Length: 142
Image (tube, rainbow, N blue to C red):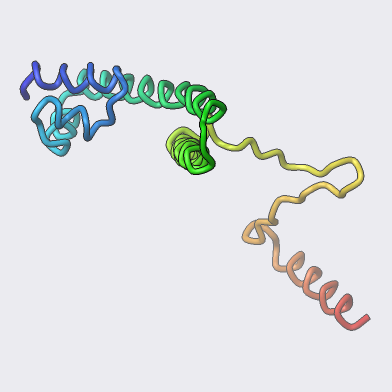
């Protein structure tokens, strides 16, 4: 491992560069850098922290994108910024869903029935399954 180039990659990521950009800046292929992370637990831990910082920075930049959209002069410029914002939000929701993903609540509104979880039939007895089938058949007939 080339420690100096690894540190350049980490510092570049913490300044906002993607892993690909940071590796290009340090003149090290991304696969090589990730291989170093596989063999060096300390480097892997530093990379994980740098990645979290990078993603948090990208999330914070959404505010800047919104402000630029508010000052945009043309509809094309606004559309481009909206696309950039939407792409960034989608990526963040997939890479860090607990922090940036949609919050999903299970349940219903007061005027709607609650959402029911799927039944795991593998835990039911044969007798219970037979009763379910009889009830289903009766409902279909009647």
